[in-house]
Amino acid sequence: MKIVILGLSITSSWGNGHATTYRGLVRELVARGHDVLFLERDVPWYAANRDLPNPPHGYTKLYANLDELKANFTQTVQDADFVMVGSYVPEGVAVGEWVTATAQGVTGFYDIDTPVTLAKLERGDTEYLSPDLIPQYTLYLSFTGGSTLQRLEQEYGAHQAKALYCSVDPSLYYPQECPQTWNLGYMGTYSDDRQPPLERLLLEPARQWGEGRFVVAGPQYPDTIQWSSNVERIEHLPPTEHQRFYNAQQFTLNITRADMVRAGYSPSVRLFEAAACGTPIISDYWQGLDTIFEIDQEILVAYSPEDVLDYLREIPDSERRAIGSRARKRVLAEHTAAHRALELEQYIMGAR
Image (cartoon, rainbow, N blue to C red; front, side, top):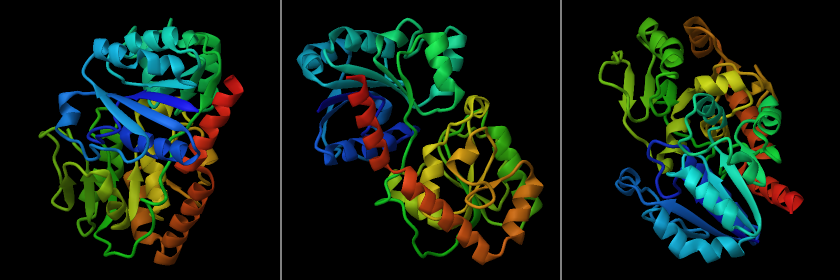
């Protein structure tokens, strides 16, 4: 098939989790014999932070504005078998209206931020999607599963809402013997709603256990945060450093955006990356987590600083490694980019 994807970014992972998802998906679609073109808006903040300026799989083209997009790619969109627009694409509503009016094949909206998107729509915020645009797409592909899919169809008129979770590239994320630099680490861009659980599940345990070693990696944290001396800060880690980062932790922390906790069934890409490395995960709880990993066997759930400290200090090293190994086995069986490419292909064929 000829596939066109208009996404937030594939060339830069700076401050977003979209790029790693698109890189794996494009690679696997190409491996399955499809012709894939990725179109990315050229914006200054990604231009200054491109860790993959020339993606090796498929074709990537940058465009400066909507007029240039239409001038250069109208025929390509018309001829494509499938055209997909992602969440947070600049001028996403205008782009989506153009795609759905122009494309002759199947169209889809890929929502990598579904609970955030629905919360925005409830507030009347149509930054990249509007209620009127949703029924114009053939497929609504969602990072969130569960009852949210029925809501998209029943309340917003989506024709076919399908779960297309994030995934991991097992050739990039795998166990590696290296020094255990930290007892517990966390990677994520700062957000107001994630900060309270980060405070509860990492910063407070660090204050209570002065001998422990902790790390927080990610950009945009305000200067007002008080970091304990045993909490290391890393401003940004490109994807090439993620695997080493996870392997240097005894445990890693997963924290979920508030909108995604409320929606449930919203596993993050970081969850799968850490598990693929065999690093045992301590996570906050949300509905549907037990459909992704078996709690207490493949993942640990924490509600308080005491829960976290019990895990860090009481679990024998052999059991810690076993938890990570079981999670890795689950991810390799169900949550790789190859699985997602096959699922997407099946959705497209079903819609045709």
